[in-house]
View 1 (cartoon, rainbow, N blue to C red):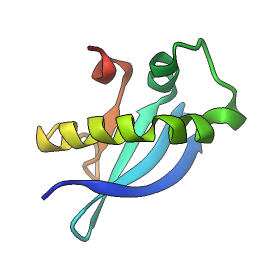
View 2: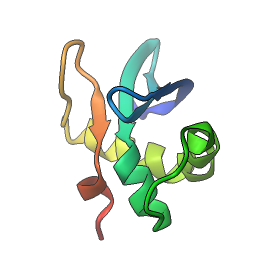
View 3: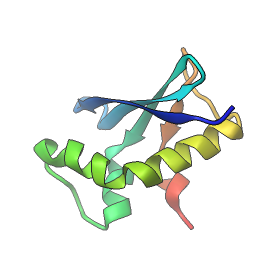
View 4: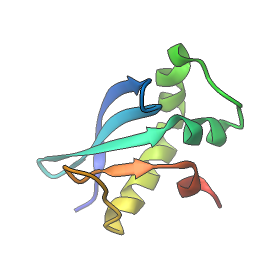
Length: 92
């Protein structure tokens, strides 16, 4: 079953990640993307904390496409198992 869009959960400053989720059937899959990955995708040095949600929303389609690829490849991490996206995941 393919992943579909879940929820935006917010910016976690201490870990420097954006938390969001994807949905597989009835199951919510926790996901995170590093702020360095977001900045790298937009070729900026460092976005302000109050700009992170808007940045995620601009890049959401690309982020979710990458999350779906990692899910299909079963590249899950943590407890509970989730998807963590880093800059390396977006290199071409």
